[in-house]
Image (cartoon, rainbow, N blue to C red):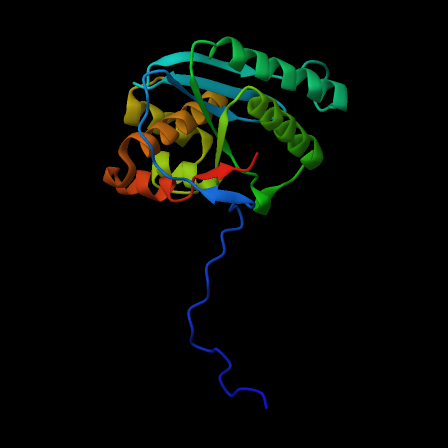
Length: 212
């Protein structure tokens, strides 16, 4: 017989649409002096790269864009962009024995436009980073915004403003601002763990290690 308990009145289980799949939960660990942390904001129009050391000194920052006509993305251009991203990161992390990178997970709830091109580029970049020996971490986009701004709906201008307020870094490119925020987020997660601020703890709880 069917149960008379229909489940009405029970709290609904929250499902994060941007939550990463096939990942293991992130665990804080000490940051060694020979560690570099990369924040990578992957985009077809302009991928932001920010590299910091164990003391959060900026080692390298750049926006790497695609070559050719705007909107005309093909596989060869994706490969070229992948190669330039990986080369830039490799050339600026040669002296490090420990290489970590934090990347935003796919925003499944707002995937529009050249979806397959973006996924293809991200997959190729992750493969290149794994081949370089990077440990890859991922975080939902809304969690990064909460870490920086306190809200998951922050706009690009607000992100840049809060980057300056939080860390004193005056960044005028939103791609680099996102990449730098990713690097600082992973650094905060590693260096503070449970002693972090409430914003940082919320972000830490959403960081996962990407399966390689």
